[in-house]
Amino acid sequence: MSRRLAMVRGARGQRRGHPAVGTQPGGPDRDSGVVSVSGRGDPELEEVRRWGGVSDLHLVDRDVLRWRGLLLPNNPPYNAGAFRFELAFSPHHPLVPPRVKLLTSIHHPGVGRDGTVCQPLTSPEKWKPITCATHVLQDLLLLLDNPSTERVLRPELARELSERPEAFLHQAEEHTRRYAEPRPDTPGP
Image (cartoon, rainbow, N blue to C red; front, side, top):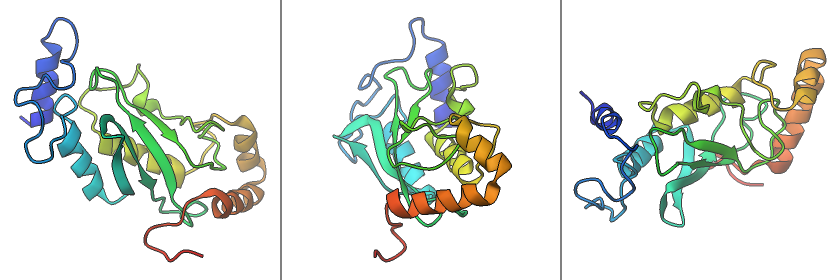
């Protein structure tokens, strides 16, 4: 049984939810000095860093419950830039899903103007405690790489994508050039 699954099963057996941060046996991670997020902090952060779909992944103010990084889309029109995101974990994680927010403006029907993301995977109804942060970010990357009219927070953009796809792609390219951060693998302007 994987370590993650064992911890989740152990958490389910407790009466009042998941143990608080820092109550895991062993306390702080000996290698990094960072307290593990219910056993998911440091090792899972490293797993996401190895994945390759993100760059500049780091803790916000040394808080293991808040991660920031750059998401690196693979497909046009968004692959011309990188998009800053924040992944915020509840103290009750993994029993409660994390919240994902894009901090970089994007012209996308599945991302609200405030950066909220249409991501059923992290909805309370669909969340599974064995879901890891890498899967959450892979799902977000899949959303960005494949704009559609199915996962919608901005109906006007979904309508534009459906009725005038060329105009949508042109607007998304222009918006990406204007607001996205430079990709770490490409030289700046």
